Image (cartoon, rainbow, N blue to C red):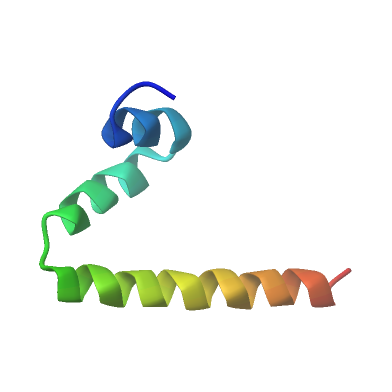
Length: 55
């Protein structure tokens, strides 16, 4: 695939507010980015499990 990671993000993330938030977080120290990644992993896991239990 061609293009920068930012180009790919702009093409894949439809929610502009979310894209702006990710750009702001990207400028933070690694420790903060790592914390956000852990939160997102937990949130995605939780919502996935909830979705499976609702089927």
